[in-house]
Length: 445
Ligand code: 9WN
Image (cartoon, protein in one colour):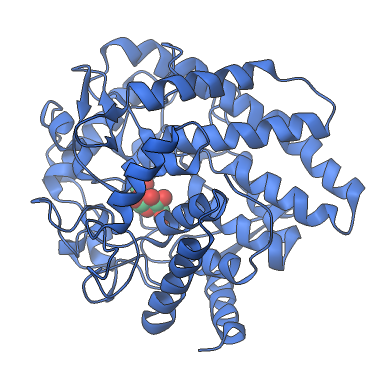
């Protein structure tokens, strides 16, 4: 397939998943059957691509997402713009009657997701600036305060320790829902009986590529705990049964803060607090999250105060940041390209699967426990490209394009066969391919 026809096909996927809300707002469903609402980091990735092909759509998508921002700055992981669509857990499950922070007239979830939006807005700004500097500045003026509010809220409620690392309170907040990194922590969490609910996801895609009922029971139990407290995350923080300093969430927060600082500079503002957050991350990532024997980065389980020594694609994510040492970078690159994660010809596609191939928990078809995801590899591609690994980055880009052109725009892929899995016509896969083919010189990391 030539690049033009890939872009055309990718645009068709996005068009089919686009929902116009009127009033200049609209959003892209990640997938019409499986995910018919708006998701936070999906929209960040999707609008990143719209910035190249339709900047006004990028703005609508971001405005729609921020219409769900709570008064306290919290940016939910889902916004339920329409009432009737099949998804579990839907608005009725999340609904907290007295939540004063929820925007009036809208339903949202009560957990968040990795803060990709600052990366998107900065990218949009850079593209729009090329033709219309004043409009570009207007975009910053509109979104900078909202993103700052969101980052301040994250810092205050999810890092009261001032470690520079963000605590997730639900596996869905990581975006890597059933990653094996959460297994032990979830063993300590109670479960809801799922027989009373209709999951719906398994009506769209094969159940053996999705999390189990047992995992869903725990996901739901955590949601219920939060709903009972109207999502006052700060009040629940001390005693909450699932609390993990997530390295990929924190690494994204780190690069997002560097964009926030750039926005501040463009607007003539000072933002010493964000510099401090970034320094805190720098200290913690290379000491607290680093496992000397394994030469790898791990998350921290705050309920036991231990490192979660499970290798996964998340442990590669500090490569995106400037905060790690040169030796750490070299060591992590060896993990990525030494055959553990498909490099060195270990798989037909030279990309990082969600977990290493030889781990006992590796399953090539099961969601975040083995398959290749395009958003993870897109982030790693940037990490390599933005840190001078031009050839390796180029090879990764080609591998992503090959995987997608040969198999279609799937949610995830079997790393051994390339077979597409989960939702078909998946929006962020299409969007990130568009970005790959519009490669510009701007940096993500
Ligand atoms: C729960 C929408 C989302 C992604 C997540 C992915 C999956 C939801 C689900 O789909 O999670 O948030 O129902 O499984 O894991 O990263 O944002 O695409």
